[in-house]
Amino acid sequence: SQEYGNVFAPARYCDAEALGTVRYPITQACTEARVACPDPDNIIGTIVRYCNCETAEWRSPDTTNCTHKWISEAKSAIERGDPAEDISGLIAANLESTLAQQLYGGDIIGSVSLGTDVLKLARQQFSTMFDRNERQLKATNFTESFGSSGDHLLSPRAVSIWQELPQSDRIEHASTLMGLLEQSALLLADYSVDEQKKILYKNWGKKGFVFDAKNLLTIIF
Image 1: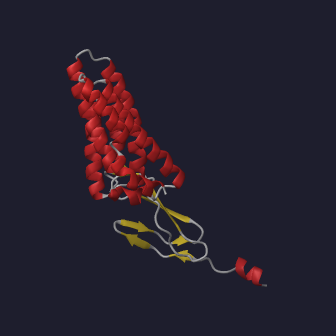
Image 2: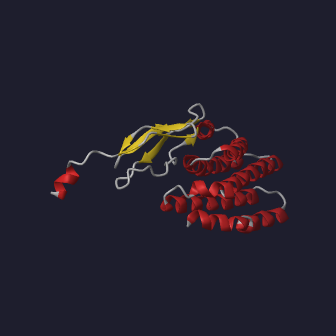
Image 3: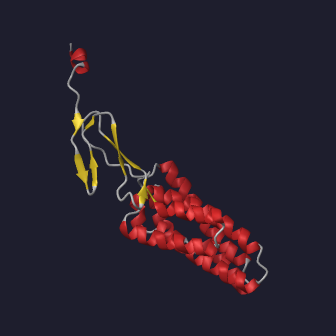
């Protein structure tokens, strides 16, 4: 019968294929291939690529598990209690260089998580400082680099990487990021010596990220 014919039909496979430096092995339909992310010296994680049941053709690779090693290095710096403004500057610089080469979904998720942790660290460190001018300088440097990280993560080049994430994850991480950016501006307002600057920074926290609204909507939807 046709039913038994389907059961005993020969297995179908997706052909072995190379995309850039990544090679996918011959893989049976309805299963997935798992290969290491490219550039293992700098990137950790696994790419998952599914072989379609109906067509025995490859789907697009899922690289959302790929993460640059600098993410874990920054996490270690936070755990050590390194100066928050230095960590924030390194995150911004690494995001800029990564975005110019190849950003992955894991980098976005990791960067948002780092933002939460480094902002908490900044609050802890700045609250114990007695020199108000030095504290304002550190808070200014921190917030400027923190804002640069936000610019990189919400830039047009990053949109396609955001869209590789499941929609629920996109909404969660994009919303968290916007909240963190506003909190960083409020942190600067809290530690500003000049009352006029306090007002400026608070307004910037509420209005300064409007230019990213189009990209944010594209990311979420």
